[in-house]
Length: 131
Image (cartoon, rainbow, N blue to C red):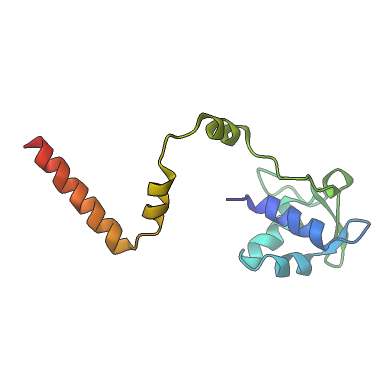
């Protein structure tokens, strides 16, 4: 799951002009899967370097220019080739889980009823082993 502030920054990079200027409305429209008020809060407050400090965690991605226009700060304009993978994810991937991915895939394709039936059978099996 991608943090909202990174989704907002990516959307700003896609919609900004050559000087890094974009419109708030464009970011809200570019992220229809997110709550519009949350996106506006991130752009106008949480990720805006010259906004009042109303949030505990802040990101200085943008500068408000007025009239619903913002500019991406120069150090955040460049798009990395790939979003950095957190170090703990790299470590977990390197260790390998030992899980059979075909079983995981099969489990994810089950309906809720099939999952419940599988759990019921597993519980019965455990009860039989205890007896």
